[in-house]
Image (cartoon, rainbow, N blue to C red; front, side, top):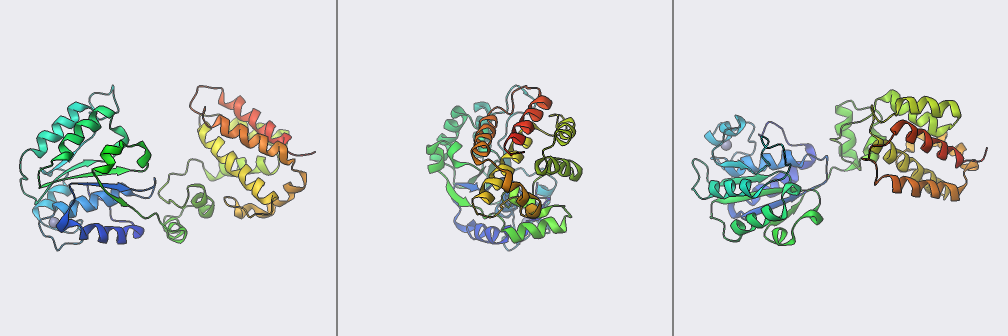
Length: 322
Ligand SMILES: [Zn+2]
């Protein structure tokens, strides 16, 4: 806990959240996109809630009792409401877990001004456990604060949302994302940023060589290139889901470019993509796009990925007039 420094795009949000500390709501719901480091912000915020020296702005440097214990992951006033890892049967937070949290908040804090219950992933709450949680949220002890994280408020029980103070976290701007990737020496930065919607903390699934192979076949869908690519993209090295998403983005860029728009994901490839335009049969391109959409719902089914990939690439080839 709290071993991560805030990311540059979180400084403002952190300052605003800290201003809440004197008038804390009993539950705070942090809303933010994937891959922007919401957990890091949450743990820094929790640290400053628990900190015994309210003046400290950086829990990583503070030497108070509370901050030291947090860094050692043994703070008695912090409770992680998570599924039991020992009971591998479920990935959900059970009613038993919720009862443990309720027991935890029934006693006053040991050394901090507050007690915190942290729910890092609200999607792990079942209807049952969320209802159990609601009971304590209706009349929480004054010294308790629940911190919840969600990237999709639509997944949550409306009654639970209504009990929480909602705070929407900023995503990094394109330039902030670009700067982060530059510092961390990620290649093809612009492409990945667009691919993951400006969220720079992603893990790149493919190597540069694989990326080269995939774009080569899309630029020139010859039989040789298709066979070469499908050898590599056999569903083992790279998920089929990735291939479908990648192809969808490529096709969406092709469609945009052919209707006079500009490339969103593959702007670096403009010179290579433009010659394809004269051969595109738009009706076939849209048909192929629909097919990708349809397949995106089936990506986790056990299929023969290599032949599926091969099939898809041959269908992509049909989009163009020879
Ligand atoms: Zn402290």
